[in-house]
Picture 1 (cartoon, helix red, strand yellow):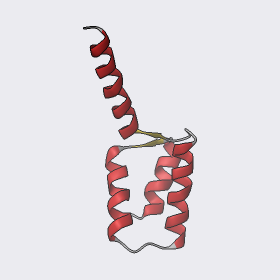
Picture 2 (tube, helix red, strand yellow):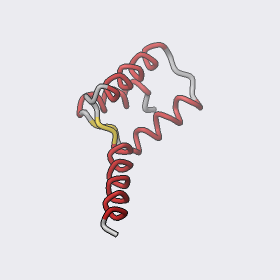
Picture 3 (cartoon, one colour):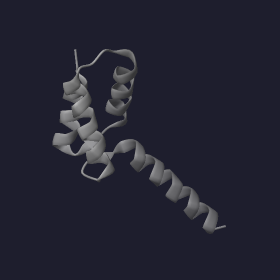
Length: 76
């Protein structure tokens, strides 16, 4: 079974959080019991994402869609 700390450490190691991992973390945080080590690992990941040390695929896609929409609106 994959633990929250495993997913968090993986994202921290590569500097990237995929949508799949983000969704898995969300599910695990809401449906499973986890210990303090898992919570601390997740909080470390959150801080790294907020400071830009870990990129989030979901944010990159959102920004790309927003940029694309803005570009198409200004070209008309």
